[in-house]
Length: 65
Image 1 (cartoon, rainbow, N blue to C red):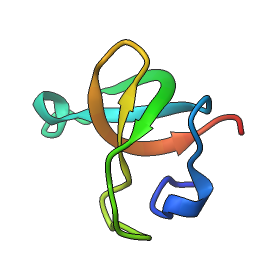
Image 2 (cartoon, one colour; image 1 turned 90 degrees about the horizontal axis):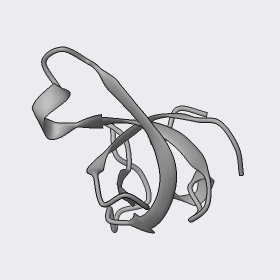
Image 3 (cartoon, rainbow, N blue to C red; image 1 turned 180 degrees about the vertical axis):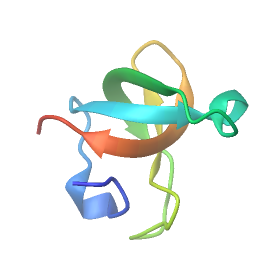
Image 4 (cartoon, rainbow, N blue to C red; image 1 turned 135 degrees about the vertical axis):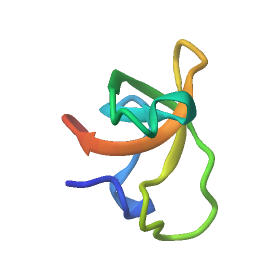
């Protein structure tokens, strides 16, 4: 799953996100979803989430559900 569909994302999932500061480099950060911040059903750059450690970014990959 690529993280572009909101229905595929649930709190507690392990995901890779790209932080705003890392968008140019493409560096990914792995964490566990705490909150889903995107309201629309899809987003071409990935659904925006807040991780349990407070970091916010767009999902690039989903590892568990």
